[in-house]
Image (spheres, rainbow, N blue to C red):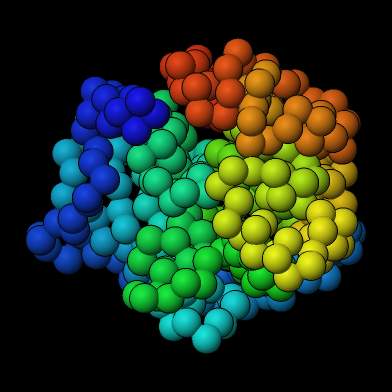
Length: 333
């Protein structure tokens, strides 16, 4: 039912599709250039965890316009290098979809992150919704997802190996900082109106990234919480990994300690004072309510919306959530 609802939403609300293809057109459909990442002010950077700091540097990028007909925005396939080099070459390139509104003037921009399962449809729906209302959206595919997943490899961003999970989340945060630098280099983007939006795993990662990137001034997370160790340990999606850890003699306490370097509750206070909106399910079976409340308190109790239903049945509130996200990131007049 959940997958069917996603398909209906994707087909009925937008002209975008899951199988994008690059337009075969003239040179105006391809752009290549160099972007610059420059850290925030020193006072802000000093609050960023050492593993998430990124020095000043330049990097090359490539954009290809996708052959999708939309009324008021274009979609571009964007690639640039990850600031992290892993043994898996395909994972060392960040792949994004850039939903760029048409029209004059500088636009706000939002980095959009996907769910644990790697289904991109929902993130594309939100990215398209933002662009329809005049806010640019950069949908970033996190490490080891989509084209970043090595063929035949079992390596994942989140795995039964805590060290791999810490490395994957760390790379994701640094990739998002790189993406922030790319957005700040765009002439059509207002660097003072940058934000981040993530769903489930994307919401948790987005919180960690926002805590580590001071230029992301607006933060909206859907179905997210803190205490990553407990969330992962108890989630049914993690049951195979949990069984492996238990078989090896590990406990929840061991796992919590192992993922401590990427625990969002240790960094979320950096977001205090920014615009924050939390959208959560009252009966979430994946993100326990105490985990959501812990993140809410770490954020200093920002606006929070509780929807009826669980982690998956909350999709019945999609239209309301979409409207709230659009309004939250609405361009300033």
